[in-house]
Image (cartoon, rainbow, N blue to C red; front, side, top):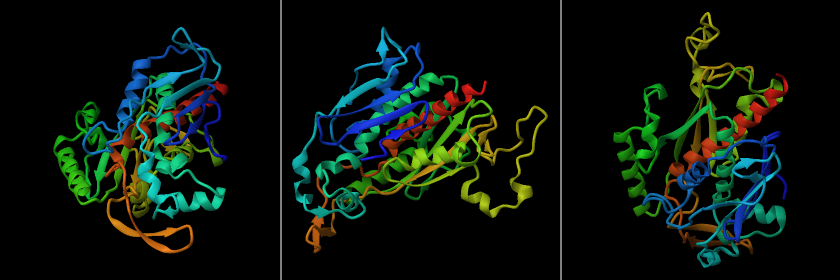
Length: 353
């Protein structure tokens, strides 16, 4: 299976399945001498882990990371950083009913057709559990680029939208509620919505907004390796993501040029930032901001039609422990992938200096 690595200079390769012994990764290209805050790394994993509140999956995993290489006396050595996160709460029998059935909107059918077999236990390699490895690498990337601030938050659940400009938000409030929305009133509405959806045996989607601040000018390459293109690839590689927009996004398509152009100040900054901090594929020093759309989780606790291995349409019902809304746990994943992109371009940019 190809496609298990991300990045050029700061490179992450992940391994493992949802119900295997462990998941993990190898980080290559992290410079030597970086003193790591292991508590901060574990905290990032705790933000993503299952079972942390009543509005997420109740699978109980400690998600404790164990580093195997590339670190000596608390500092990176410049050699590959290997790590594992053991799976401790698998309930593979919850998936025995889909051994020969392809669930709607899952990767079951495409994996079977591409590889000739599949690990049906929790989706195997296609499970979002793989993203825990990304969070570890993203936490290290954040420490490498510690002057750059990356803050993601839940900006919508279903039809409940946070429509305030991010400049008016207090990012310190994001972790104050289980849905990770930095607006208390809207957060309560979102939580109530998710609880209501869960009782119905349903799921619901939403969006995560991410803001990257203190980005130096010059990150990104023109043509195929544009900064926003790599951010888009990073976000679209996350399970359940259906859309990505940065800056003015799709709203910009309805504007005139005179309305959309970001006019300069004398110091090179811009009066507005509809470009989203990126022009010509290169960071311009302004805030980078983007929004990521997540679909409703495909597994619903309702009866629906599915396809079995013999080609017959059969009735099935989802079982097991699943998120009614993936968005709250996706917030640290979005931050991690953003950090991987920025760290990679940060190192690439140093080559030119």
